[in-house]
Image 1 (tube, rainbow over the protein chains, first blue to last red):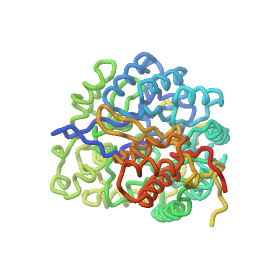
Image 2: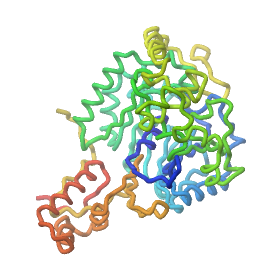
Image 3: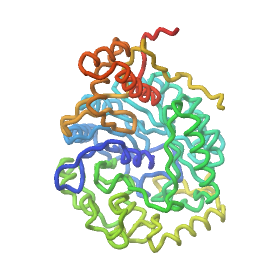
Image 4: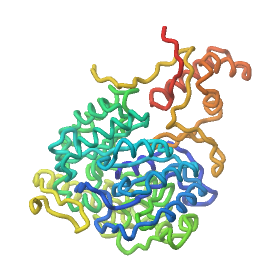
Length: 389
Length: 107
């Protein structure tokens, strides 16, 4: 899921921003309908403090937000979670988005889907389905997802997706414990008739940060992955598009996270908070405005939290005098906060950050230690793998 | 090299193909930004004026020859050049799964 956001932000749209503004018209919205999810992936992109069902926006509140975003110029809505199909009103919300002129994507674990429900979603105007996979085979995939039988349900839902004529993206979240399966995952995506495969290395915020030692790939794995992906991209041209997200800790330049903080994208949390990305609540001390208190248009213009890291004025050195500052906008604020305690610091993924060497060594050390026990994601703040059963 | 096959192969365009945008590739004029956009999974593409004109002719009824013919009437360029541009644009979209072809006469 993490990576979908990046793709949204790296979109090929060259959309003009208003004159003099440091941000544009929002292009895509991630609507996290709920944090409820039957899976317990240790790298879940939701915040560690999950929002309870009782705090979720009502159907009417979501519909109003959807109407407002379409009026603002948003073009695509990604229905996500948690598990969005856990919301009983999903079909109604998709239909509302279609009527508002939005292009809708479903980002799902697929384990709760039935063929009938998928057909209803398709009839309601759903344009694209993205299914997350934890591996290419039951054993490991079901262990990572913490859900027995999950992998085979996903395969079934992927087939229904294509039978209904909907385009399919296979989202494969990759880490040390499943990277050896990558060639099989690529074959699986082709056999499933997927249009796109996202090979998304885990990004370390929230739950994934808690599980970093169990997930961090070795440098050799990352090099091998890049080789496999590049070979497959060439070989499968016209057959399967493969998007690749490398892990930040082994990068030299930081990513232009979300295309920049509050630039062209926002996220609505289950309770209605408007965030620049799904991970932004990991930065403590920021107050995010809610669609329960303000219109989306007001929030996009005025939210102090959204305005905080827009443009380049907030930047410290070495970003402030760096020739790459417009290119990467200083990298990721959540990662800067997670690794330095200061959200305004240069993203340590950047080779120019004084901490870059240190996080690179942390990654190497953790990967070599090969401690594979997960802390599974749940509403109780996580459960250690060894403490289950 | 690979034995792998899609169960729905990408169409190879010929002069007789009658192309149409796939259901999940939506061309629309965005009133807020005052420009045409092509909405596809995870992407928003911004087609140039020529591409918009070509895509608006892709109705699943007109063949590629018909599309080229319509453009030839409007523009002074040589037919072969126009045809090359049309095929290049549409085959690229077909390769990405954004274009379907109806009623193709397989030779």
